[in-house]
Image (tube, rainbow, N blue to C red):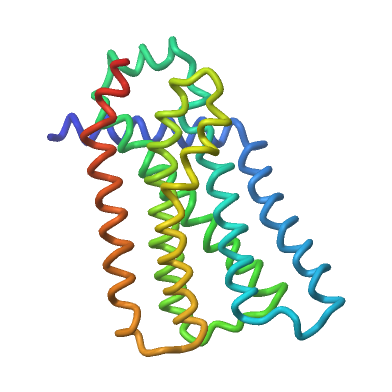
Length: 224
């Protein structure tokens, strides 16, 4: 058990070090968020009153979704075959997929909170129940990270991983996106939190299913 934890920690540390050495990728994600928010500001600042809370919420989740795809698409695509074989001799497939999911979760949580802060500062904050909205952000970030990491692993085995990543990701992400949109809309309107419990449970169930599938199915994908 201790050895497994140490291997998992080493794999996560490797992910952080690779990201830090390739800071241009992280800077590109931050630039995308800032640029998208700035474009929204320029678009709606000239037409005051047209940025309703529903539009505000939808635009934010669209920005966060494409940020997640850009951030996580490279999880396995950037790994060369020789490096993957080397990992195969060091750790189990479950540890490899879990380390990437945990790293992408941490990355998405940071990007989601940072993006929300910038978005709310520039375009205003119409959210009435901020704690519930933050909880929705965390659940959405975890779901995006888990789902897209598994899709990235599948796409990396194809000849055109970027195209396959785009094709496979949206059908998987769409149910999760619909649920977080509904919860965040309830937070915007300041409705009682009990109204959102069913959707929160569904999102937690989706996250758990994706994590379980990743744990069970990735070893077969890894051996191929």
